[in-house]
Length: 233
Image 1: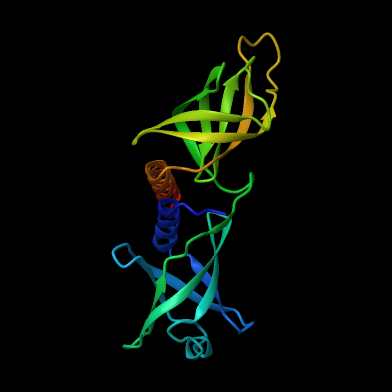
Image 2 (image 1 turned 180 degrees about the horizontal axis):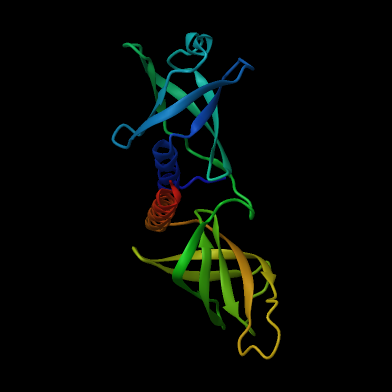
């Protein structure tokens, strides 16, 4: 469960930019409706979303109504509760929603994470430290390549400094797994695969990760578009 307001704003902004379809459940109604998040007003601390479809869903919404929203971003399921602050019925209706105080962000290891290029991390604890290459990263955690031997083990907590193109940030990480490298002699070096989850991220760290992921996605989409144009007859 994510509760940091800045992390929540980053994810909501990405949902809006992605025009991700959103399922909505009105309190007291078991039917599932659809909507789209349109904008994020930080001054009003509010979300703006499109009217519910089909139309009978919109007919059941009132100012003060509670709704549960569910959607996916990069394969990760996100759920959160909102309350309708106001309704604009001019033409196509839109709702002003209170910003959620928490997001149920159901990330797991097999979902999308931004692949990293030339990113470094430094792990430190009371009496040990280790340098690592960042293999991929998301709001929820990261995957590292750490040269063996090293002092890192599963279920340990480490302080981690990650250096991104837009700046460095510090965060506590909880090591989920350490997978020994398959490299066999006569290779000179061996890197273990380390998976970790972030603890509480600072607002600045969340913004940096969000920007890096957005930039990486844009570059990937641009490369795919160029490749498709080259293959086109």
